Image (tube, rainbow, N blue to C red; front, side):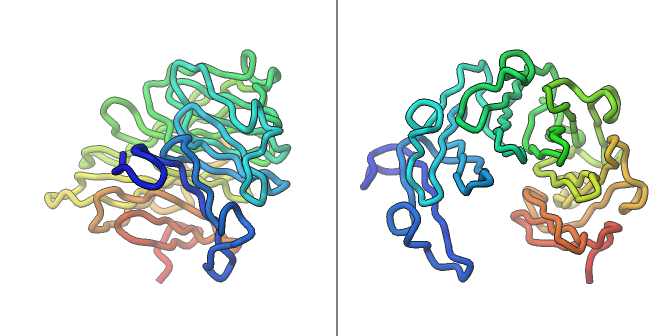
Amino acid sequence: MRPEGKYGDFTDFGMARYTRHGRLDRSFGDGGKVVSHDGAGGSVAIQDDGRIVVVPAPGRLSRYTADGRLDRSFARGGAVVSDFDEAFGLIAVQADGKIVAIGTGVLARYTRDGRLDPSFGRGGRVVTDFTWNPTALAIHGDGRIVVAGSRSPNPDGFALARYTGEGHLDLTFGNSGEVLTSFGPHAAGASASAIAIQPDGKIVAVGEEWGADVENFSYFALARYTRDGKLDASFGAGGKVLTRFRSSCGALSVAIQLDGKIVAGGCGGLARYKSDGSLDS
């Protein structure tokens, strides 16, 4: 919530596009910016034709054209509102343009034009009973969907699950579709915030581990998994890496460079790792 102003006494959804040189792209929206009253803003993904899918508020999907106009051909007048018990907040776009959305307890897939995909789960959605909160979403090249987060209500490790392209738990992954990773006996807790999939199919998850020493600093926590959900022994110490930062949140995002190096960022700073998990000096 913010004070009453140009757009009213509520939180607006805002989006901006920049040129590769960091200037506002005046061809996008209104002078480079888009403002709507849909909500505070959240996850964003781009389809192969340049259209932009966003979660402007929990449980709502909107799509914009490549030039920043609400795409009226999407769903009903440019937006779809879920009737799920648990509203989604994360989205990713498959190679075929279908949109995957997830929230606590529900996973859904939409067609390119914003309708629930009847070929996925039951009528387009999958209800899960995992006792953890999803905070990250990524899609393999073959359409399998990886979700990551932390246990609830007391997060003590990374939690991952993988689904087939039809919306079933992938029983070839981890322990019947799910993987839980603890970061050691001295940690007070850990949680995953973001994931990325390498070209070879290995999965890199990053997040926060806290309470590992008397000063209670947070750590950038990283783990890498093989395609079948096992910790990758060639990465860090048994598949895991901890990097100490003066941070209150750990790592919040991750990206894989073309040379295989891993970049993780959070409110404590930025770090780059070699493909074996060692810090890149």
